[in-house]
Amino acid sequence: MKASTCKACGNVTFPYQPICSRCRGRNVEPVELRGNGRIVSYTVNYQYREGFERQAPQIVALIELEEGPKILGLLTDAEPEEVYEGQRVTAVLRRVSTDSYHGIIYYALKFRPVRDGS
Amino acid sequence: MERKVGIVGYGITKFGRRTDASLSELSWEAGAEAMRSAGIEGKEVKGLVVSNVGMWSSEELPAVVVGEALGVRNVPTLRVEAACASGSSAIHTAYDMIASGRADIVLALGVEKMHEVDTETAVELIGRAGNYMWEYEFFGLTFPGYYALHQTAYMKKYDSKEEDFALVSVKNHGYAQYNPYAQFRNPVTLEEVMKSKYVAWPVKLLDSSPITDGAAAVVLASSRVAKELTDTPVWITGLGVANGTSNLSRRRSFTSLEASVEAARTAYASANVDQSAPWKHIDVATVHDCFTVAEVMAYEDLNFAARGEGVKLLREGQTQVGGRIPVNLDGGLKAKGHPIGATGVAMAVEVSKQLLRKAEKGRQADIRNGRALTHNVGGTGHYAYVTIYEV
Image (cartoon, rainbow over all chains, first blue to last red; front, side, top):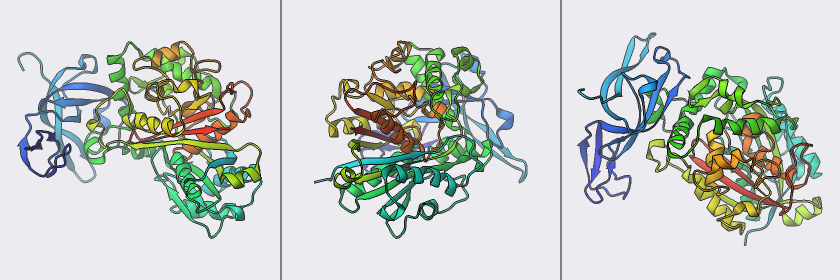
């Protein structure tokens, strides 16, 4: 997860862009985010789009990463009843959708709850 | 110095599944009624602003189609878009054309035909109302999910539960039964709302506005022409607009829409309405209840209630006729329906009827100050328009 850190104001912008999203300064450098954060809010989505049928219902969470930026992400390896605000999560690479017509499988980052011992 | 602008005529179609009428025919229904009530003909209209989101629509150039249907020719004509706030953007654009002195009579018309595609396609298209790459493409999140994130955050932060939000649906369906133009005229009970299926937890089907076809139109005129046309113009005295980040995750709050707060502040200042207790000066309001949580957040963003007390206002019935400030007496987006490009104009039609005491029996507010407010949101606070009307 590549972001940019502003050397002038310290703000972290995700995804990476060459201009700081807070002070508009250009003195930024790329930084690799660790992928750890906490859930700010979440929903269990019962609607689904083509290609997502087998994953419904999906748990979608608004996550505040420990470096500062907030992002939207899918939860994986979690049941709706065990999710809560403030829960610690970490990014893992997972399959997000499949295109059975073209035979393409798409992978992206999802977030897995951090449990004791994991 | 800006010129004063007022509404001198309005028209609206029956909302719902309107596969019986084309975009042109729907626009004619609302537009011809608006011109008839203003006592004018198409050739007197000197500007035409059409709001239409239209991603599902077969008409590529809707403003031209509307002009032809209504006999409005050789005038500045354009289509405007601000997602679900498109209708308000049409009214604000028409206002600017008149206030600047460019025209004396402008027609603002909103129209949407969402049933030209099936529900799945509509859900997919509406889901893109955010940041496409970072919130939609990989996550499959649909539009109710964006508001669900707000409701979850609200329930965590303030003393409230799903039943509190369901009260919005019960209230708005209750008033829609008296509105002959509404899509759903059936009252619903708290139990029915609570038992409806989850769309995106904690948002249920009966917390959600429907897919709707419909059109609404208002004729706007400069003060000089307005006074010639009618004894009862409805003046636009306050306007506020703001925009938010495309990316929901870049917002500071998830229990409020910052764009609504900012639009309300500007509108109250321009209409000289008390920022801290605006409800003392306003008799009736329409707010953007695309989901029930959106109405609760609107109460607080508009300062009808303090932070966290929007649900209390509902529990006490303060947003019904006779309460602190009656809200969505036309049934709201929830029950009247939400043809997204037409909604903002339909709100202007509704507050005009309310201020002129022409609302149908059972849903007329007490008009004491002669002042009303419309609040229209595009996306999830991507756009917010607040407009104040006076008689």
